[in-house]
Image 1 (cartoon, one colour):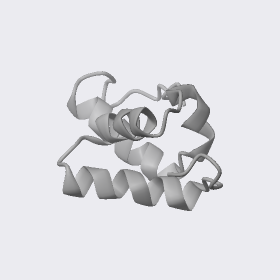
Image 2: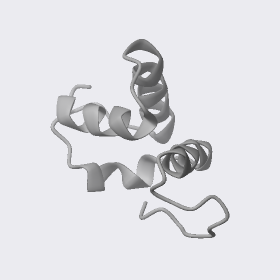
Image 3: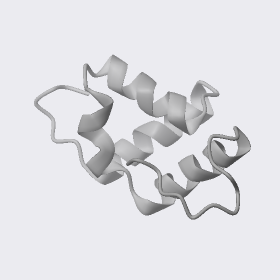
Length: 77
């Protein structure tokens, strides 16, 4: 992304989904990769994470045992 382009939630989500599919990355890794490629701090994109994307990240975190499945713990995003 051009740094002068406005990044919307939709554009961000689409970019992350493309990275997951094309580069076979996890959602967590895709977000980190996107940030690295676009010279962004991961904290700066947390407002762009949509509820469906957040659910996918949470499911991934549960499968990686970062969160307990029955936990009502919230992701720090």
